[in-house]
Length: 540
Image 1 (tube, one colour):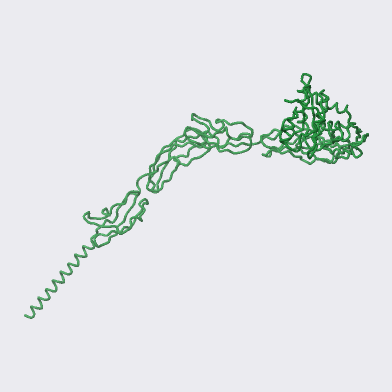
Image 2 (image 1 turned 45 degrees about the horizontal axis):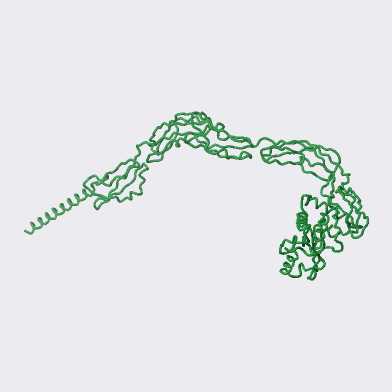
């Protein structure tokens, strides 16, 4: 019995062990069975494949362990990818391939003769997952104007290639056009041959300054495209001028530009001596004048310089013997001038120290002038100082009357013209010599200044010479003296005062009543006088 029990236990143990081993084997087989594909392939530049594309069974579900965002989907290559299926993580490979050739939109190009253009300039909107290299199948002839067909090769990094055909137009347009400074304009034909294209300046060339060297960027429209060229204003022409031989005084240098006239150049011209002349040696010498413009163009011209010595004395013009009157103001330099063959604005010296204008007699006045070379001229004139008599006064009075009255006027009209002239000619200074009315009248007319006595005296001289009766009226009382005239133009005596007053009152032909009224208003005994000494005026 005991032996059977042992055999039975052994059998159960063997059976359990076998079942355990079998279970473990089955589990291992299940664990070692792959759940994902070994490799998944996709085209570069496309959207990342879903995780289901990696699973062997579509009924399975899984998720990426690898951060897919770190993968460059545009770069061909093999990338390791980890995927979780259930509780297990599996490894797979993502293979990115590039089998699609690049594409692009062609843009025909136009360039200037002599320029070159890269192949990539013809391609726009290039599409490819990888970078694309551009090249010409055959290099264009950039030295031949006109149209030519070019074939472009587009090749990506995976050696996928595309050939595209484009049209290259080479314009016969100059990159730089040069014009001489001083030109007035340029033409479009100077820049480009149209060759059937519509060409025109986009830049307003009429506003450009052609007077001095400068470079301008010029825009030229060919059909609907703008191209750039340059306009270079150059100055290659040397200045010209005419020579003027010159004379210079010893030790006195003259500027080089005095030797030339009529300078012609588009720019500013500097005039200089090639070698400085010798201004210390008398006689003729040949000199060289250099004309240089702002562009360093030079012209050399020969001229003759004559160095001379100044031995000629200045001339004093206008000196003559004169008669003046006692007390008269004398301007010794009036109408006197000095001329010299060399110098200008020489000083005129007058020695009138012997003249006594208060005493009759003949006096010597000496005029002298010396030029810068030391040449001196001296002239002497005789000034005769004389007293003023009636004839002398009448002469100056007649000159005035000839200008202001004529025989067609009535006495009253003549008197009024005399009134206006005296009032306007004499300026009031508040001072005059009252010893002699003839002298007072003369100086009033000649000098045009004085006080109320002067106005009276001038008026008396003019009225008397015009044949109009008049007499002196003197103020009585008041702080100062005052003098005026009574006149009779044939219709009675009236007050006549050519001296201005502060009220600007017209004081021509006033009656006694009117001067009394003004005196009452003005005060200070303005027209107060001894009526017993004068005839009464008419009563209005």
